[in-house]
Image 1 (cartoon, rainbow, N blue to C red):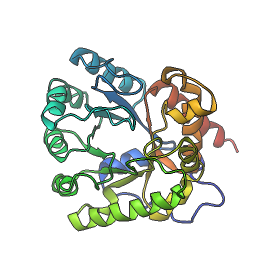
Image 2: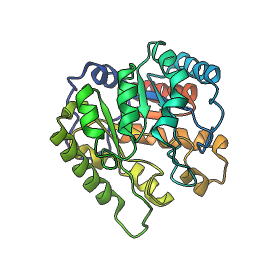
Image 3: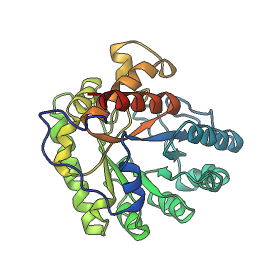
Length: 287
């Protein structure tokens, strides 16, 4: 199986979650794959491609057929540059003709939103996981909404802006410590939590690569890790390329993330990511 950490990683390993959904996702021989479904006009990679309900539902079906273990739906671009904020009402308007149909496909769905009202509505509509790009620290009602529904939550590290002068790993560790205190105070079970270092969010390109290279240091929390490096701009800083040309860089980053301990990989290119992870796992088993 894929090695879950480097030889210098902390000894802390995630305990087997009591939550049945997370337990099923994390018990596989290689990382689960979360397919990205953007119901937005301005996402950095595929903005506008799936705004129409029939296109969005078809894309969800396609990703599930390609091996996606989770479909992550977002209706507001959270790209860290040039995105436009929208209201909760507009976000739900975009989701309304799509969400129930995707949930009905039978694969777990996560809601990528930083608004507690949207998350509450989505979870009531059958969504199984909350994905908060601000790690419970932006919307003061987010933690209690998630606790009320008793679902898993992905807590992502974020910053308002990148600062090249900080130690990014110390910043991530401190951020997660704050988020976990918020989660505990709200009553979110610890075994419902997944941590995401937020590749490309509030980080320079070098800091994003550092977070990937040193991902195993985050195992100190004893919680599962998710990484979404798919098509991110740091790839362009190494090999100039447009988002649709970054498949090779995305796969390289995700394979390294899996080696460092990531148990969920968030990707646009599901078939290629599934194949890369499964082949890497099959090769490792021959050692």
